[in-house]
Image (cartoon, rainbow, N blue to C red; front, side, top):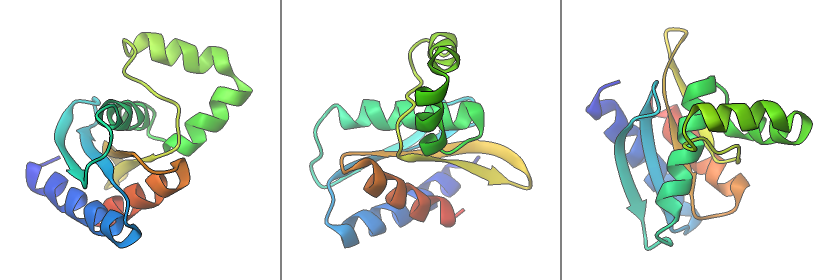
Length: 131
């Protein structure tokens, strides 16, 4: 994924966050979960950037939206624990990230933290729609 793609995703997510009046951290990671771009809308708590990255890394690693990962955490916690260990702790099974897919391939994910989990996901989906 190009930085220009990440910029477009972040801008669309920020627009949604602004419309919702939410202070959040927004991150785009590549398919390996490596951060490409991180920005904040407003003044969210400092820890939100770490949470947003963990959500996005988990989503990119699995190719699934993090809401599904949160459900898996409840049903099969051992599997999620294994993925967290495999990713060196950079994997959070919390709602608020969506996988980015182009031409049928996972190219990364966008993660958001700072609002409710449902609001984070809504903001992330707005960003992903710009891809």
